[in-house]
Structure formats: structure tokens, C-alpha cells
Image 1: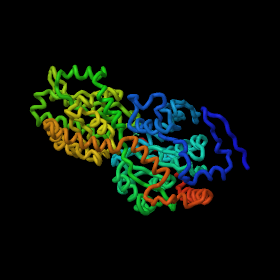
Image 2 (image 1 turned 120 degrees about the horizontal axis):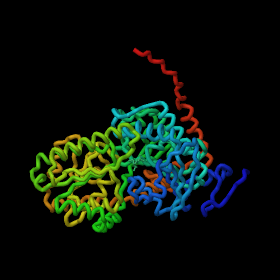
Image 3 (image 1 turned 180 degrees about the horizontal axis):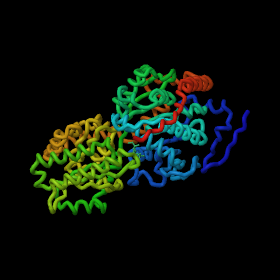
Image 4 (image 1 turned 180 degrees about the vertical axis):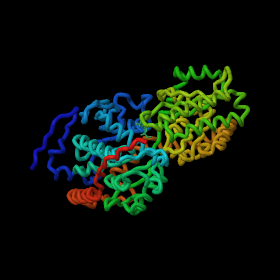
Length: 543
Ligand code: F6P
């Protein structure tokens, strides 16, 4: 029997799984419904260590994951957000309450090719249906799989056999595939925060087959909407990588994975309280004082081409053109747009274009004492944002494509029930599946969006209240806590099965499961293409 090494690590007993007897390792993996749940290990590309999810820099993913870990405690593993000049940076630990953060810096080259390259110039645009903006390169592909393997190597040293591993977002699709290859038989779930497109779009993804088959290493794969989950199942079939078997389960290369929709929510009650308390916030007070009783509209988005910002600004111009009352009332549109991913050329380009459009609109419609559009590239804390949402009679959430969009949900939760504002929401945001009582628009239809803004501006109080109440009911039915509970419940006990105390994993003994997983991984590895040999580029002759 191999040596088992135990030592105290951050106050808990840590087992060095690389040294542990394999039998012991796999015996714990079968699902025993009576056993206490193992530790939750959350993995995301970026970990807001030290910043706290309530910090201005944190996005929806960070807020949701903090909610997940607050209840259960556990480990949050990923990139520190810093770059290093060294090739391999060590993992650093930080403890906050019951959560341990385990983070490492990324070498500059990996940041360029894996994060800016494959993740944000191939996966991001294609998953947002923007094939025209995709930049494909062999070195991006190689970096994506290489960095995922490095994440897996580092993580594998930290996990114990009964940990539940929850991997997040498009940066880390192949992570479980590498963990399995290293012998990991923990239950591993994956949640995609962004959309998943239909086969005709998705097949433009580089390493498409390899990516699709990588999903098979997870026990559970979650999408934001039913439409995304359906697209994914269609991709498996169209690419001959798998098939649907019964309710919400897919077979991918012979291994069974649960595939389901888990729409992400917000901490509804907490956000309502934050918005009520926000009146006293200094930023909110300054904003209100500057308005002098005039109406406010708001948009809050990262600076990203998927958010439909150019179209939104144009629609605002149309609204001013077609609604003389708006011009007389000197309505102000506050667009808060923190810069993001500026290293990626398409984002830098958009930054320039938006600044130009803002200038055009203010030049055309503004006056000596009225700036119709206030465009701010700053981040604000949740308290200030909640107060600004509450002070705004219209919330504009008009992405061209969005996984969910939590700004839409937060805007609704922040409203005063006796005088709520109106949400204008894109049909292409995942949130539109739940917030059906918003004014739903097609963001490509500039005139239509302008008309919807005008309708929101003059909407009677009773209609506003009815719409608000219906949307609040939807938010209360699916908070971020429900999302966490549903996902983790499914990860522990796959759904779509009669509760016989058995499921597809229980049907196998630990040894059978281990053997079948190893066979599966050998199969997919043997089919993976070898890296393309780079031919030297012929020298160009100068003309
Ligand atoms: O929407 C996808 C997402 O990854 C969010 O989860 C996150 O808040 C946001 O993009 C920020 O991305 P980045 O880490 O590239 O700044």
C-alpha cells in the first residue's frame, strides 16, 4: 500500500492525493446518498481575491460565486488577475472566513494567447454570434489547451477525493478532461455564463470537435437558458460527438453527462435592501442634485461589442428626435461603461467609436445647460449602482447577445414599488426568458428601440406597477441562492432519474467507473489532432 501523507494545511487536514492509494481514492467516489457533502471547489479564470465580490471591479460571475461559497465555504481556485514574467508561478493562498482563495499569476505569453487570444478573440465572439470578429490562430489554440492543462495540474494537487468541483465559464471548457486524464474521479460540474450558439455558428470555433468532446468529461454541464442547452445538444448530434439520451442527459463519446439549463439569478432580497439604503449614498446624491428634478435613464455595461452600445446610443438619438416631451423635459441618459479587455483590438476600436458617437449626440441635441448623454468609463460600487437604478425612470439593457445579463435583474429589484421605472430589454438577453413583462425589443431595430423608449417614458403608473410586480415574482422565484442550490443538487444527484437511490454513476463500482473513465479519456486523447507543424512563412519580395 502506498504511503499516505497527511499534514495540516490552513487549519484543515489535507490529503496528498498524488501519494494516496488508488483504491482509497476511488472508493469515495460512488454516490452515497447518506454521506455528508464534500468540500465545494469553485474554479474560474479570474478570482477577485482580496477585492471582494462587492467591489466595483467584480462582474456577475464573481458576485454569484461569492454567494455560492458564502453558504458552504470551500476553495476558490484560478488566476489572480496579475501577470508574471516567470513561466510558472506558484499558487498563493488567502483565507477569508470559510473560503480559501488559491490563485496564481499568469505568464505574460499565456495572458496574450490564452486569455486575450483564444478565450476573447475566438470563443467570446463566436459564442456571441460574431463570426466576423473572430481572430483564429494555431498559437491561440495551443495556448488554450496548454493553460487548461496547467490549471488542472495545479488544481489536482489541491483536491481531495470527495470534493465537488464546479468549473465556470468559457475559459476552462477542457479543464475536466485534463483532470480525468490525471485520474480524478470527483464529481465535476461546468457552468457556461455566456451563450452557446447553434451548430452552424458553433462550427466556426477552432478545435471544435476537441472542445465539444471535452464537455464529456464533466458529470454536469449547465447553460443559462433552455435555448443554449438545446443548441449544445444539436451541436453534439451535428458533429457526431454525442447524442441525447432521455431527459437532460447526453452521451458524449460513450460517457454520460447531464446537460441542463440553470438560469443565474441575483440576491433579490439583499438587492432590494441595498437599493432602499442607497438614497444616502454620496454618488447618488450628487447625481440627483445635478439633475435638478429632471428625468434620468440608465444603462450599465462593460465596454463590449456584445452589449449593443452603438445601436443603443443611436436609438436614444431617435427617441429625442421623435419625442418632443423628452427634449422639453431635458431627459438625461447616464451610460456607465467601464473599459474592459482593452488589449484586444476590437475592444480598443469600439472604445474610440463610442466616444465619437457620444460627442455626435451631445453636439446635435445638447444645449448650454443640458448634456443629454453622460458617458462614464468608471466603475461604481453596488450601493451607488442600486441607488442610480432606483433613481432612473428607464433602464436600458439592449445587448445584441448576452448569456443572462444581471443588470436587467438588478434594475428591476432596485425599483420603488409605488413608482417603478420601466425596463427596456433585448430579446437576445438570456434574462428575456424570465423577465417577460419588460418592454422587449430587437436591438438591431433602432427605430423600434427608440419607439420603446418613448413608450416607457410615457407609460402610465398602473401599467408600470403591473409589469414590475410580474418581474419581481420571477426574480423571487429564482434567486442566486436557488441557482446555486439547483446546480449543486444536480451535481450530487443527477436529475431526470427516478429516485431509486441509483443513478448512472451508482450503477458502476468505483473500479468499473475508474476503468471506464480511463478508457474514455484514452479514446478521446487518441483522436485528438497532433499540433500542426508550422512551415516557415516564405519571405515576401519587396515590390
Ligand atoms: O460575461 C462573462 C464574464 O466572464 C463574466 O463572468 C465576467 O464578469 C466578465 O465576463 C468579465 O470578464 P473579464 O474577466 O474578461 O474581465
